[in-house]
Length: 73
Image 1 (tube, rainbow, N blue to C red):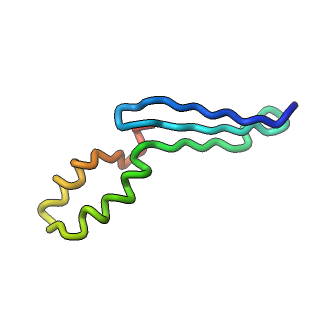
Image 2: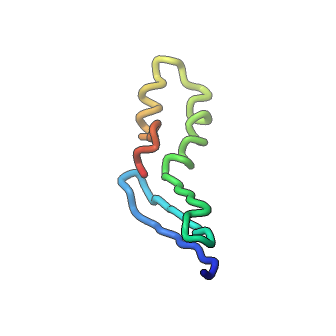
Image 3: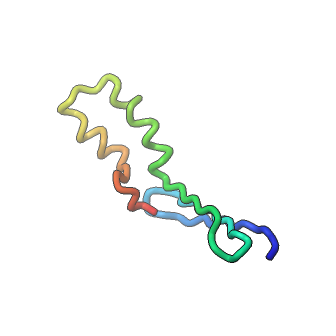
């Protein structure tokens, strides 16, 4: 079997979802990686909360509409 890989791109309701797979020589999956749109936005949340008081956290958190459980995949 020849080495290959596959990439899939789909539009989710939070943004673009990308997946990449690499099969192993015996037909099993050697590597699977999925990236959800929330992954990139989680890095911006601490910056947005830097000057925010505690009672404003729910508003700021919901403004980013992040997936805590990764269910936007």
